[in-house]
Amino acid sequence: MRSQILRGRVWVLAWPDGRLIEDIDTDQIFHNSHLHITEISQMGAYALGNLEGWKDFPQKAKPGDILVAGRNFGAGSSRQQAVDCFVALGVKGIMAPSFSAIYFRNAVNAGFPVLRSEGLERPAAEGLLRSGDEIEIDLSSGRGRNVTRNESISFEPMSAIQAEIYEAGNVFRLKRS
Amino acid sequence: MAKTVIEKIIQAHSREDVSAGRIVWMDLDVRSARDFGGPNVVKNYEREYGGAALDDPARTVFTFDLCAPACTLKYADNQQACRVFARKRGVRVYDVDQGIGSHVLMEEGLARPGGTAVGTDSHMNILGAIGCFGQGMGDIDITFAFRMGKTWFEVPESVNVVLKGNPSPRATAKDLALFLCLKLGTSKIALRSAEFYGPAVRALDLAGRITLCSMITEMAGIIGFIPEEIVNPGKSAAAFASAGEPPVAADPDARYADTIEVNVDGLEPQIAVPPSPNTVKPVSEARGVRIDSGFIGSCTNGRIEDLAAAAAVLRGRKIRPGVMLKVVPATRRVYEDILSTGILKTLFESGAIVLNPGCGGCAEGHAGLTGKGEVEISTGNRNFPGKQGKGSVYLASPVTVAASCVKGEIVSPGEI
Ligand code: SF4
Image (tube, rainbow over all chains, first blue to last red):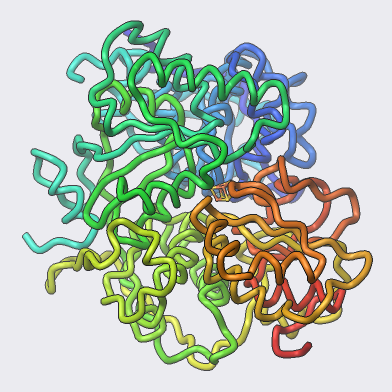
């Protein structure tokens, strides 16, 4: 069984006023000039490499970190590298109010937790969810907590197929296929 | 139960009960990979499935359009890895000479009305233009599809988008698409399937439908369909194997998550100003912005109709010295058409650079990049920062781009 509990330091992709950055596209996550890279271990160095203010993310990120972003995260192209670059850095998952459809599938198929939560925007804007906070979330229940600030966090529990693929490790290991 | 267009198409490819919100397994008529994504698919396939056979090589294709022919050693290696895999497994390669993959699928009849197709191209939903359910997917998804011939899919809700009124005769399909990017933003049809109705879309020829449907990705939609009857298929239809087959229609009492009315009456030419395809205004409000370069092409505006419209503006005129116009036909078929109709000559004589078919000019690669401070006006579908280089990119129709390149600054097409 893969762990249903994720605990880690959070990076909140927000503007200086705390509003979550929306519509972060795959060129900002993993720029198309690096698309020729096919080795996952080499992709981490370019994560968020084209997002103003976050170019040093690969140096700052530690394995176990969790990302929080604004709505429509992963807009744009279909590149798997935009998911794999976070996997390469050991990032444990991404929470956002919504994801682009392709990005969401790519992450689900890679067994990488992407969690939809409408309830992130307000705490981020009010300073109740900030980079550096420690959070703990339970994938099976859709509940969690900001340990640093003792605030609760909720999100949509995974769908049956998402949970199944996560459990299997990735879509290739899915039994019933 | 009554079904929307997308529900109907998926139902015809699934043994489960299909309705919005359900996650079902769906059979795929075509699965494709490009020269980006493709090499990862090959790698994934060899690693995960080894020598196991593809579900159906005849329904599996590679299309090389991004870096065509390869301009870096990496791309050359990657394309070659796909070719070797394809030869070994009996898979067809539409190689670097053929043009944009999604367009090739339509021309070749691999994508047809009522069908399903996936590929490593986020604009695969452009196939909605002919009533085919197309979807861009990442390389893991496509690897799985190569092997299994099916995929899991969450059936999206559908939105009814009704366009009211008739745009001005100066407005093209691109102006309509840009205006919808403005009106629908990235939230109104996000993660949903859109069905477009009304006289303004009924009037669109196939090329115009392609233009509109190519920008659904920029509205964060899953796909867009135009179930309205095609009154005037246009020149491109001759290139499409499935031309003449009617688009899929929704059942009369199908359920929609929302109905959105957009008034397009008297719509004038539009332009997306940096930094996003959704920051759109009338061209007249961007008038006078000096430009360094122009680009006509991409899956959005690379058909014969688009190039012919641009050529009509450029005939007998010269591109302003100091301005560079790059033209890239969508496919080899389009190239053939501009060659035989004299459009190529017109473009050449105006001073344009005409490149071989593909994604050049939209994706980084062949038709060059923009440098820091450079201003480009493009018929592409994206102007996100960094997409075509360091310059700033405006998105407009082929006629607006052509006129602006003659003038050296942004102008409405009627103004020159
Ligand atoms: S022209 Fe651009 S948007 Fe269209 S398929 Fe090619 S790279 Fe993608």
